Image (tube, rainbow over all chains, first blue to last red; front, top):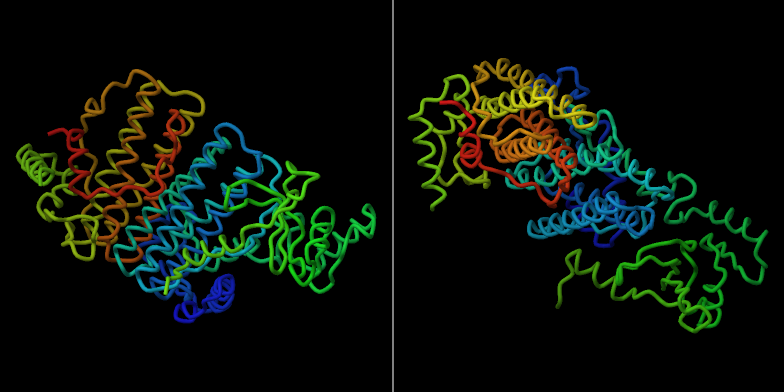
Length: 338
Length: 209
């Protein structure tokens, strides 16, 4: 599985292949990992029942890639939360620092995988988070996300054969546990920590995070827009009611619409031949170059960014620095100069 | 180099001082078996533990101490409201760790170390809620680092999984208590590990000789 993973160089595809191709197999081949003393130790009234060690995590490299997959998700989720403008005071402080931690984990795992001769999985182009609406909702969501992360490490780390990697994984796992606990205490949860932390198997973790990774199972109203044609069609239908038809184009080829200032720019500066079809609806996202949040929309060959501060000028719509962003990702995922 | 010398002195003192047999058994195993170069590079380093039972007794020594520390500090009456609620809960959880680890050692055919006698005065003043919470935060952090530094020596995967499940709870306790006392709950991106030597050095003053 890992050789297969490594040979896949296209980002995004790599991850999907990793998740999907392993996910189906794992359930049937789960081994009883902790029937004996382990569950005796943690069995004292806790929910720890022993871990179903999934076949998916056969090698240390599989486990590192699995961890990196989750860290990418977490790091991106923190970026979105930090860019939401909904967090204040203590919560804002927690999210900023914890987000930095997750990025540090991404770097460390990426580095480790490269040193071991692997090709680190890249971040997905898009994740499918619930619409972020309030501080309370965000903290609650992240308490769950961190809980899953901590439990994932707990389920996978004992499988690591290299004890140095185990030590490294433990040093990350404990930070995820600290994050989860911090959020629970922030919410005044009467049970902010169990007596025994619960491990989750690979299957359980993947089931838990799949809604963030795949559009098909994403609930309505994402922070990042879905690329499901049906949703976009509905969006288009809704907009047609309120927007004049000449200010909105619907592209059945990709199921997305272009409207407003983005449509004006698209029409004026080369349209389909230059930018291709829209592949998202407009959404609020972080510009990775300057760290700020803009309304953005992806096209096949471009990312449009709305700059209201330049409204009425030729700079109201700008193109994202796709080349720079892609180069950074390539370097991060192991690209080497000739 | 200096660190190693200091540790050697500590170990001599510890042995000479004659710790209570029960409390010290876990630590004594370290004293006798510890490798001077023993660090966190588990693959290369000779294990300071002769068996998984030794690792568990090391953990149990610390869990006994933590459980008793919680009991004593909670009894001082310095904590109220959310502080008290959480600290009482965590104290019960430490007691649960004691019985779980004891149980595991018994099942492995080993002899679990018993609760010792402790010198809590070594922890410093306990006049205010801040005093009490800071002591707990410090001790919990040592506990996390101890588990993290020892986990790599555990041979049996099930025991390792169980130890990790307790380790994460110590991390949670640390974060929450730090938060209660106004410290940032997780200042670092990576949790620090401590070798048995380093842990021994820190906790020795708390064990009555």
